[in-house]
Length: 487
Image 1 (spheres, helix red, strand yellow):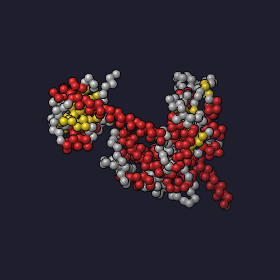
Image 2 (tube, rainbow, N blue to C red):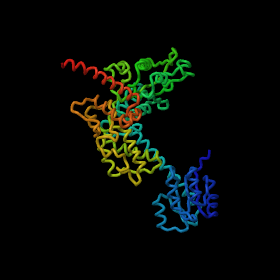
Image 3 (tube, rainbow, N blue to C red):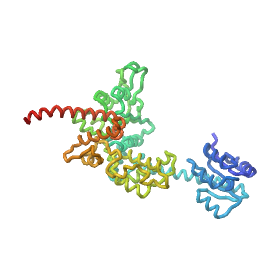
Image 4 (cartoon, rainbow, N blue to C red):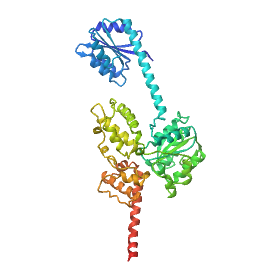
């Protein structure tokens, strides 16, 4: 493998190109181009470490080539050369980002020394950037950004629990970063090289979930044409992350309890126990304690999962972190979308601080990406962000995942829609029902879209609709009895 630094020589004079190439090719891997188009082809298709370009390239302009080279995802160090040197030209080239400026006729030894110096400077710059990223990563605890007071005990808990093997239950509204916390615990656990395997429990039917978790033998059920290794076995020696744990059925709860307690599993269709070494982290946006009281979740499994509990706060009570999170997403999403980094405009952040963020960090990230993509100026202004930010209490869709919010929060989340009529005696269940009906109406009765608007899985929405129908049926039955009693 060739590990020489690559140098692109751009000059419209053949004897200059060839002379530089002959002088430098013993030390560097050299490319030559006679015009800007040829140079750009190299810059876009090859790794170029240093570009040495003439200021005048026939009909082309070396300054424009400099700008184009420095706009590449991995820009080279650029050195300008010209026979028409002047202080003003040198200043302009340096202002645009050139590393240095040399005049013709060239001293070839000095050019070689200059290139080596430029390469050393770039190496030091990359090392400094990498060191800064490591410091930032350490400060942010594996990417969990936050300086708000409510985040300090959470970060301390993550650091304390990570090296242990204790099972962790992460609770919080949709979009608060539960999977990010799970990954931080795994990465700080001392076994980050092992797998972290994730399972979205609400997305699978009970039979498929059981097979997904524990695997199955060939022929164990219709369609089982070959043996399948389950997620527990895939995560052996590492971490299994069970998202939306509150959605699993009673039968799977029993098998999960045994897996946690005995560290053994059995594939579907087999009675042979398989020993495992898996650390389980579970997450939910539901109130599992309440589900235990209602008989919908096993109490023994609840306590097995909840050895250590982490409650993630919604973004609306840690708004002090919005500037830090916003800047992080601006940099990340500019890079993802192939855009130059642009800071927030002075009108954007105040609107973001007033908004309640019912979708939490996930919604903030989506709003920032909207701004990055739509910005046509040198900043991301309020006009580039989603229009619903003009409503500080609501959301564009106006909906918040209702399972973990208080009645007070629910009232503030209600949009000004005549379909929803708050009353002083309105309870949390009625608020939830009305939000669901509004989501269905806005989505054209598309349950998948409505579930996304509500920040829940489609399966959760179906369960809630079923509960709503049972309540309505019960009320209709009670009405004749109440009328008979009154008469």
